[in-house]
Image (cartoon, rainbow, N blue to C red; front, side, top):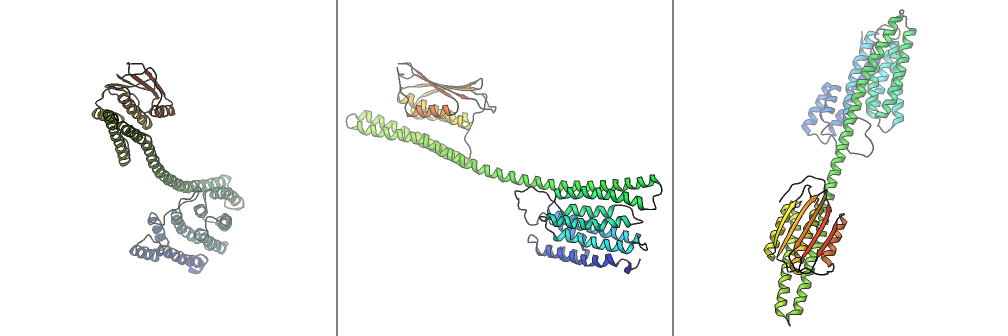
Length: 466
């Protein structure tokens, strides 16, 4: 085989080789994620080894290539750098099989036409694979049709090389270049056309005088085509699926970060509201008590001092509530309920001398809002027991039964025949009812007060303490 015999492939092939080298040398040079030494190494490899080195460059630098912009539309095509790496390998395969076909058909009647068709298809492949953007479906269909028009006659006229690999390479290059929906349409069309090509070739060729040989040729050629095509199509689809998963993971990470930020803001707003509700109420009560003490000071100094002492305790309690809220903001979470309850009881005993007996029996883990309501209720009951009932002892029972949490607080104070809901009890009742609970108060003269509340239980399993 002389050089003049294969010039229709060699000449466009040589020009295309130089074009591909220049294209990827420029691509490498403009890659901002590579150091100068890396660029120099890849460029030198592309100059020496041409297309295979370009494929290695594309695969090796994919992770450091320009960051992917996650768009809202669905991913329907392979990542551009992987797609180009596969494409340049297909070009190498095309060149190898083209030379094999040319050498096998040298001296035949249709040799010149086969050579021209292979060269033209090679040029169209490069234009389609490197220069056409994915967003232009009509141009994709046109260039795909041209490649099929050029390569199908080659398979039909080929007298000594009946394998369908050259068509498979062209179809694989088309699928690799277009989006997945376009690939499905093109693949189905090409499969029907290829079957028609095989049947036509069997009918017009003199080599298939035996019907069994003809059927075997069509069956084996179509089977090879389908198997190889299915493998490449599945690979392409898997690569797209991987991209879709990566995109979904990226979105989930972004959403998780947004939810985390929203949770922080929501928690801060909650703590701010709690400070307003509890500390504000405590300090307001302290101011009222101080004003009452000032009014009594001229006529009843002893009673005024009692008012000032009570106001002092209220201010201390408000300061402690502020510290607890600030600690919650700083640590990012609230303490365990049992720990919070124990701390609250210890502080009440220390500041008031009120003796508190507690029994806690819980099966479910309390929700944060339930913890706050229960603790606020206990604080309000202790305050009322000391302030109005002159109590010295307080019994606290917190238990769960049939998915209902019940808190009962009883004191040994003065009690009352009748009473009015003050600001504290009104706020307490509103909080409890907002959670689907109930509030009941039982009292009689010299029988103390008993406050009972119920709340729906939480879902998580918890512990038990007696």
